[in-house]
Length: 296
Image (cartoon, rainbow, N blue to C red):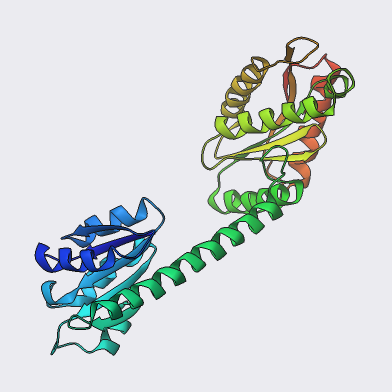
């Protein structure tokens, strides 16, 4: 856990640092500006900031507010007779308040409690994020699962409709994956699906998204792109997937994919129409031997 000590005078800050170094598993550093402390904490996902208020600005609320996005807690250390009360400091954004003339053991205890609370909060947040990932991600490919993709697609269609934009939707199928499973084993087939999912995610922009619909089928949504632009992106993806190579006891394995691509039509109010057109285009690509992109 990181602890930033913020003061514009090095002497008192270094004294606090020495007092806290008996606590294990803390990485402690001293800063003379809120910006430096905030940047340092954010690189590791947050931590505790100890602000020595007797050496900071007359208006401490500005200092505390500037630290709020450091994703951590703030301990305000007030000198005796400080003009602003502890309750006002808490309202301004401090998580805890203590006096600068308190015994070092008391300060260490306060810091230890705040660090424990931060670590618990981070653990709970990590567990929450894992639950969310399990709810929306396909574990094999790392892309969205079918339900999450369709929910996101319907929301994206509504958004681009409001803005008067368009989007491209593609359905992609890995050619002859059943033969791969039969010849090389299902574990090898799972490896192929994982690699295809990873390549899809890396090939897309931040606003684009991909999902695994089930079996060997993937879907990709490219907002604010017309049919020509979407075709160029997906052709690059198709060619890139054909360069993947998978070593196996039966020799090196390569794959191809077939893609059906469509764009949002004027009458489309939800995902049903685009999915049906992309699916028909995919069937056309399959009928023509696969390893190709068809527009529909």
